[in-house]
Length: 395
Image (cartoon, one colour):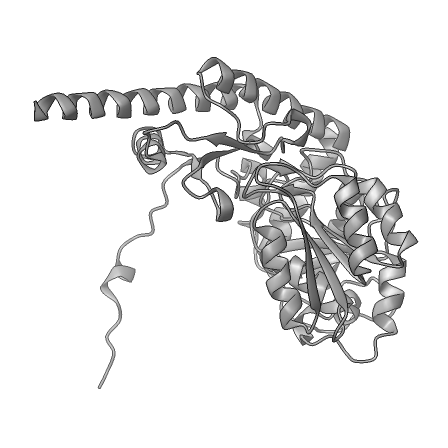
C-alpha cells in the first residue's frame, strides 16, 4: 500500500487577515512579522545565542527583576505553568491554589501529577480573592507552594495585592508562583519588589509576539530550593537547571538542551524591543486607558461587565455579560463573518455567560476600542431584529 501525497497541499497557502480582539493571541506588528522572515539559524550558533541573551535582558525588564535564572521555555504559556510547578514540587508537598477562574484548576491538575497534596482557596463567582481569605487558607493548609494568576483570562478578574501575598509567603516559608500570562503589560507587576519566586508570561498577549515561547524567571530563593531537591524534576524538558545552562544563566558553558526556534526568537526579540522602547509604565497606562474607555462604552450600550467590583477588573481581557436571550456564538460569528473581527465567548466557569474582549498589544488603542464597541452593538441589534422577524413569521 502506498499513501499518496495529499491533494490539499497542492493548493497555495492562504491566511486571512483578522483583527484578534479575543483573550489572545493578539496581532503581531509588521516589525515582528518581518523579523520572523529572516533566515533560520542553528540553535547553538553564536548569533542565535546572542539573540537569546538580548531576549533575556528584555524579559528582566518587563518582569522588573535581576534574577539570573531568567529564560524562555519553548512552548505555549502552559509550558511556563508546567516548568514552575515541575521544578518546585516534590512528592507530598502541600500546594495551595488561588482560584478566581479556570487557571487555578489547571495548575492543580498539573501539581497533582507531580505528586503534590493539592488544596484550594476559591473566590466566589465573579470576584477576586481577599487577603483575609488567603491568610486563613495559609494558616489552615500551611502550603509549600502557593499559585495564583494575577489576571485570569477566563473570568477577566485581576488579583491585586500580589506584594502582600509575597510577604505572606515569606512569613510561611512558602514559594510564590504568579501566572502573568494575561496581565503583564496591562497592569503593574514588580517581581523582585513583590517577592515573587516564579513568574511566567505569554509572548502572544500584550507583548505582541508569536506564540510558542514562554518567558519565565526564578528567584535566587527558588533556585536554591530547586538545587537542594531530594530528586530531580520529573520532566527533563522542564528542568530549569538544564534549560538555564542553555540560556547562559549560570555562568557555566552553554549546553544543548533542545532545538529552539530561531524564527520565534526573532519575533519575540523585536516584540520586546518595541515594548522597551515605549516604556513599561507607558504600555501599562495605555492598556488601562483603553479598558476604561471600553467599560464606559459597554455601560452606554446598556450592557454589563461580569466583574462587579471595578478594581478587580483585568484591563487586558474584559468580560462582558451576554444579554438575556442573545446567543453569544451568533454575535461572534457576525463580527467575524462581516468584519473579520474576533470576539470570544467565555471559558471554563464563564462559558455561555460572557463575551471576552481582549485589549492586548497592537490592539490596545482607543480606535480599536471604538471599533469593537460599534461592531458588538451592531451584531447584537442585528440578532435581536432577526429574532423579531422570525417570531412574526410564525404568526
